[in-house]
Length: 311
Image (spheres, rainbow, N blue to C red):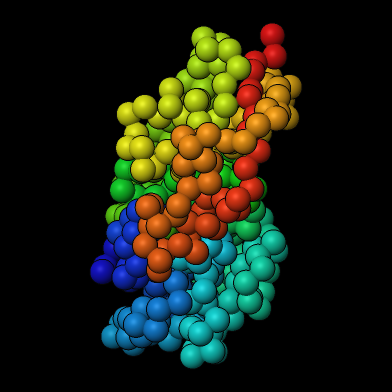
């Protein structure tokens, strides 16, 4: 449970393929017997109890609640925790979940003797914030960077690949002295610069593979691209991979490097499996809302297109 000298982690019991080993809630010892909670997590009463009990066991009163973004495994616990403690909820200006105060880029959240700086961090979600805790030289990254060696989902319409890549570069370049990253899932990261470099390189590599596929194969549908680029990925995860491919293609279309050609036909069975998946094959019923939010899939909304490079 203890993650650092002034940081406590309480992990929600919501393990799934989308949330990995569960969502991390963090309590910062802000001094003066006060605590700041980051990401109160899903709407699980037992998790709310665990947050309150952890604060109490350490002699802390919850004075502020900060939410990195509005996905169902991070934000829903904020309102009941606020009602229980009287602490205000801080969130991004684009947040649609209940909150009391808005944090813009560079704004500070204060409690006790501690200040956190909010960093506008779009890409995984439009309403995403990262928090910089200068006293401990650490970043709370939500779902921008996670701690189990996995990458994160960047899926339209709420996700934006170029915005996400800019966020990664910004965190690496503006916080070179960061000593630790606390992600929304997994363990803390002790080598932030190395991991950020790896995240950046991974996205560039996937995009290069996509472009090479179009160069070698000519016009390709998203399922065909997935089959080439993600051939080493378990097929059960290909629907998630397809959402990543869409994010790259949208970026490349905006830049005039790729053009889409609508195909006037119904999807075949393989295409439907990838583009309109049965989410019960990926997650259980309790995790479906997270999958819908993360992947941005609208059931039944399929338009088959072929994409090609602009020479």
